[in-house]
Structures are given as structure tokens and as C-alpha cells.
Image (cartoon, rainbow, N blue to C red; front, top):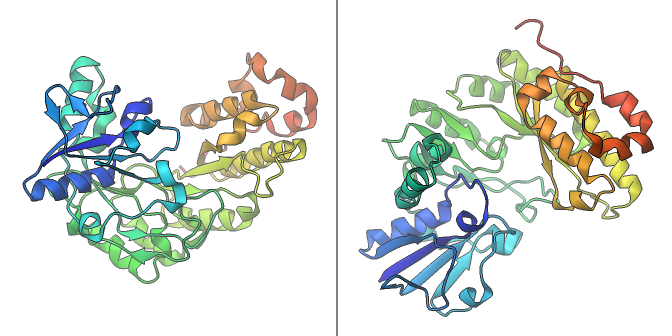
Length: 369
């Protein structure tokens, strides 16, 4: 058969820079059985799925992001199969076991990447996850059941794949997509030790759950050849005391490291979305940022899609611009970073108390550095 594969995020998302693991597994599986597999990356997808003179017998479409668009008439074709969180969010069906546990085809994107570099003059470093990383899940699931998460229906973390299932020895680094590896019973330690044994730098791209960081876990992590920043999440202001305590545990074993925290905002757990919520949300963002400043940590602001419905969307945009550039966050207060920003004048006029309390807070450098 001629198999066509469409990464919908590749077509719709600007600055897309991460391969679709499910599609790489599908490609690896079908190539292993002698089928011809081709990544389709044309924006204009015809109803007959003709591209040049080639006809595809079966087409697989996947997307991670819900706002990546795919023409409805394509999805209705009998030889098209589609899936992924972008289509079904928390109800996305799993791949068949034999495909889920098949070695990924790390060359699926080669032609597309080559064209991006050659014809669109993009730098090779933009595509590091296509060239340098083995990608996979060592565990699946999470027990937190956060309302906004694709894992909200899960209740536990289970071991998923051994390293050799996706480890390409010729690739320099490893990227894990686990949701909560530190919550995987007694398996977390053996997984980290196996990763250490590869001698390759590795990272958990989804972040780690600092709320369950113990002295032992911090010690094991500190012995790892970790790639990039240690990333955690500070999604809920109610977790502030345990977050502060666990940051101290982290710093005890890795005093020179500057951890990064995802700061999730603009999500109303009470589903009211009224003016009181929006004000409180802004206050809680600043409170969380203040804690990170005091403990020499850096943020990465992640806005829930409803932030655009806020009475002050410009403020969320300005916060994101400041927070998500570590050099600005470390060197300037929010007020300094927005000295000439007229877009937030309305907020400053309506909430002078918040301005006075938070806008001039600054990152505290580590005196023991």
C-alpha cells in the first residue's frame, strides 16, 4: 500500500518545532511490513487525496492542538483515519498496542525539515527535536485529575515503555513525554537510573511534579545528566506552601540550578468567568511570580484559551512577554519592562492597589551563586 501521513499541526501551527510521535510510530510500523509511507505536508489537500501523480490507499491524520484545522470533507473519506488530542482531547483513542509499542520512524520528517532549511532559510537548531532526540514515554497517566488537562480522566501513573522501545543510539539526547514520572510508584527510580546509564542528556518535556519531590528523588535527579532547565508546574496558588517547601528541597541538591515553572492562568475552576475572577486571577499570577522571584526560579506563563475574554487581555499579553523571556524577568520589574506600554493603562487606572503592590517587584539573585 501507499500510506499517506498528515501532521495537521505541521500545516496549521506557526513555528511548529516538534514531531508527532504517534505518526512516527505508525510510519515505523507500516514501513516494517514493506508499505510505502510518505509525509504529506501540502496545505491544499484535495478530496481525492491526489498529490502530483500519486494516489494513497490509506491516510492517517493526527494533531495535538485543537486549533489546527483539517477540512471536514477529508475526514469523511473512507480511507482516512484520524486521531490525537487535537481531535478528541481527553477522549482520544489509543493507538493499537502493536503500533503504540513499535519503534518510531525518526526519518518521517526528513524531507520536510530539509525543505524548511533549504527553501525557507530556517536554522537547523530550530529542528533539534527532529535531529537530535529519541522521543517516547517511559510512563503514562497522572493521578492529579486537573480539570484542564488531557489526563483528567486518569487516576494513576503506570510504567509504559522500556527505553529500547524508542532509544536510537545514534541520537545525542532523549526527550520524554511522560505526564508525571515521579508519581509512578517505585518505578520512577529504576527509570531515572536507566536513563543515567545511557550517558545521554535527557529531559521530561511536560515537566515534573515538584509537589511529590522527596529528598531521595531530588538526590537521584541531581546525579542525572539533565538536558536544559528542570521544569515544574505552579498551576494553583493554593499549592504555594508546598511549592516553597519543595523548591528548598530542590535547591538543597541542585543549588546552582535555576528551575523553571509553568504558571497556568486564566482558568476559572468555578466556571464563573466574572470580573471578580479576572481580578483574582491577575493577583494570583503576581503572587506566584513573587514566590518564584524570592526563590530564584523563572516562570513560563501559560494562558488558558479564555484569556482573550478577560476585560484586560492586553495585561495577559504583557505578562507573557515579560515572564517568558528569562533575561527580562531577571533584570526588570514588570513596571520597567512595560514603561512605555500604553495598552495596560486601563488596568493601571482601575486597580492602582495591584499596581502598587506588584508592578515593581524584582527577581532576587542568589547571593550564594
